Image (cartoon, rainbow, N blue to C red; front, side):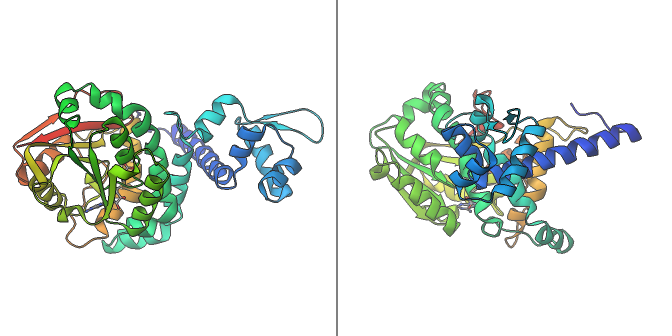
Length: 356
Ligand SMILES: C[S@@+](CC[C@H](N)C(=O)[O-])C[C@H]1O[C@@H](n2cnc3c(N)ncnc32)[C@H](O)[C@@H]1O
């Protein structure tokens, strides 16, 4: 739990620590975007000239970045000139291994990508308007998909298998499953792999996200023939079609979640269920909060609330959607049962089951 910062000394430390952390994230963004971490991980240690030659970048900038990375403790520098810089194995996993549950490179891209929109955010905060998912652009869209991908690929199948009634339902032959707000479709692809007799439909309202999803599905030929990506608002789901609908980390972004959940309910066949994966925030507002709350309020300030507010008649949920809020939305949408699934230790998320 974070303490309230009541002394000048503690505030000075917080601001300095935050500044150092911000500098780390900005340097990580550069290392990721310029392919420097990937080159060091794949092709081994490099001098500034070697790294620049390998990645088609400028040697003077490469030197400054390599020295900064060694000074901040992410790279190891050799003695003597020219220095050669090594990316240790642990840093390679966290910053470049897109299949590892410890992969956090996209978090730097996400936060720096949000920060690039601060002028629009200032306007939105003044006027009550928003900054849409489409306006937040490729950094937001692609880092979101990359951040969640390992969790869907590596952890989701076992998590769902740990809930036998749900797992049995998903194993039924010919079952139709929808994945709303599917983003880059890594959840849709993971579900198709985990449930080989299912047909999957991924829905997303943002055209650029739909293109990303289509590319990811096309790059997954083992399941591509069982997945359809639909460019549509989830409030237009077909009626009585799906035995299960998943909503991964998207309900809190939606301007009119009750309308969407109502359409989701009507899209279910008899006995169908809905699984919502959303942020594992505390039951109630508590200040000061823990790191999860601090992180989620950060995402809310910079992305999810302004995204939600960018549409007319938005309820303005934001990232910090408390369990009582989702429950209220679900009941207003006509669901009669809302429970939390016994899936623990799954990133920053909680799984809810909605039924009628
Ligand atoms: C935070 S992203 C999550 C993407 C993905 N589910 C994941 O976990 O990586 C939210 C997604 O929901 C989509 N979305 C928001 N409102 C929607 C709606 N009403 N219908 C369909 N998609 C929607 C956005 O375009 C965005 O791709």
